[in-house]
Length: 78
Figure (tube, rainbow, N blue to C red):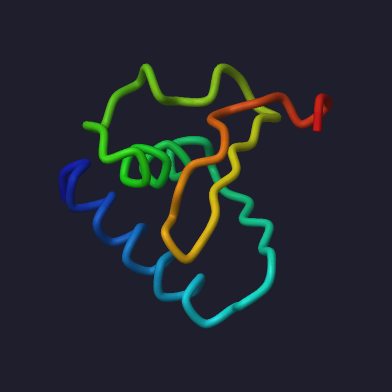
């Protein structure tokens, strides 16, 4: 399975989950999985440049529409 296959699998499962929950959700994952989702949301190619700088970061997006509000930020900054 290549990176694009992994991205499709994880993103499809995530979107299916998000679609069944109408309220805010906290999704916690390995940074690599978060990067795959972030790249998909930004319609950007999979790239290490989109990976979280170091552990303890988060990004936020809205749904429906899946618009990215902000990319990786340290959790300590909220």
